[in-house]
Length: 172
Image 1 (cartoon, rainbow, N blue to C red):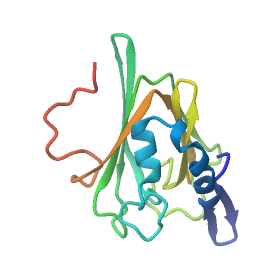
Image 2 (cartoon, helix red, strand yellow):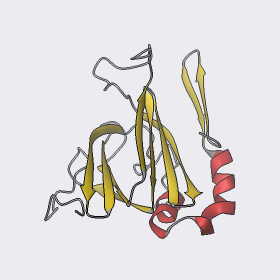
Image 3 (cartoon, helix red, strand yellow):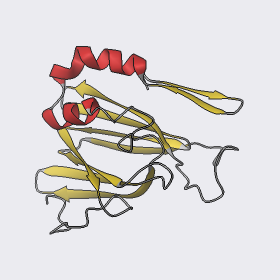
C-alpha cells in the first residue's frame, strides 16, 4: 500500500484509509469509470457501513484467458457480523494478477476458521498506464490486479456471487 496505513499493533491492526482518500481526490479523474465509482463509493472506507470492504473474505477467484484479453473475477464473502451481502469485482483486460500469501501463515489474531489469506483490511485503486492498479491488503497476504477497468457489485448470495446471474461467462 502506498497511501493507506496498515500497522500491526499489540491487539491487532491499526487501519487508516484517510491518506489514500486524500490522494483519491487528486487522482479521481485519472481512474477509469468503474474503478472511480468503486473507490469513491461512500461506504467503501466507512468501517461502520455494510458496503465497507474491510473484513470481507476471499471466497473464489477466476481467470479467463479469452481472445485478445484476460478477465479476472474476485468474489468476496461477507463477514456475518457486518455485511448484508458479498462483493464481486470483475477486472477487464487484466495484465497483472498476483496473489501473495504471508510466509508465516495464520497470525495470532485470526479466528479458528479464518481462510489462508485472511480478512480484507484495506485496498487502494490508483491510475496505471493500462487503466488502474488495485491492491488489496489481507491479514494473511495481498492481491494485486492491473487492468483496463474494474466493475464492483455487491451481490445477494453470501459468497460474493450474484443470485440472478444469467451466465457463468467471464467475457471470453
